[in-house]
Length: 55
Image (cartoon, rainbow, N blue to C red; front, side):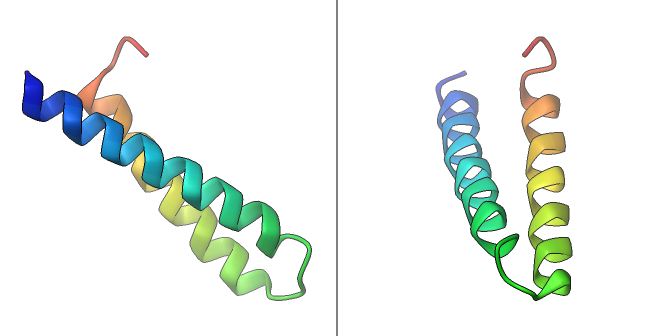
């Protein structure tokens, strides 16, 4: 339980970082970078849902 909670917290921080990076990237003109960051954020979000389906 403790390990999964720590993993959840790490993934949550990583997700928030990706969302911030995506926000900054959206102001630029590199749409491929935006697509990559969005895909990474979605993958992290999916993993978070796997760890804690009720959230």
